[in-house]
Length: 253
Image (cartoon, rainbow, N blue to C red; front, side, top):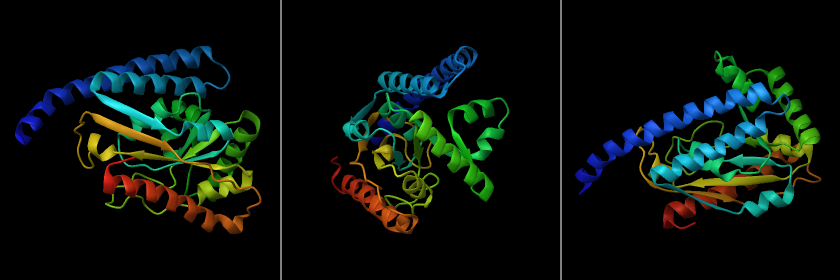
């Protein structure tokens, strides 16, 4: 039976990756149209395309999305969004979860240097060179401006990179929590679950299944100072760890 399932995954993956590429090409065309026609704030239109991409790809490949807790982010408005980062499945469930949310991911500056695509990344992301204190400072100032003037919520992977370990989460960096405190906005954690079952670690194979996204209750930062970064970081880490570990132990969300 396991051999049969493995064999059936071959034509399924040919289809899944083919539709991934085809939809990606169509989305790229949509991006070009957006850049040619939208002069201000093209980012929100780009993420609307990503939402449709993720939804369509999931529907035609048997990857279902189960999203809950959206009321938590809808209620607070501008916030810092903290998301765990497990695998390629995040590329599907995360955009599918964010319909109507005015957000921009924080990412590494190297993406902005890629020929042609660099312009896209610079328009859609907030890019920071973590090795450069000056770049980090500029990135934080950009985030503050986006939050104050445009109501944009930064989306940050506090683990810094994909968690390839056997642990539910990697150790968190300080950045997301410093930004939230400096801007006095709440943190809304999002936990992505069952990613390994659909897109296993260390494999290019995709499996049909269900991906879960859970928005956790917002954590206020009003009145906190930078002296509270460590305690705030630990509070968020504990909440997300408990959710991920509970799912790993019980399979229930």
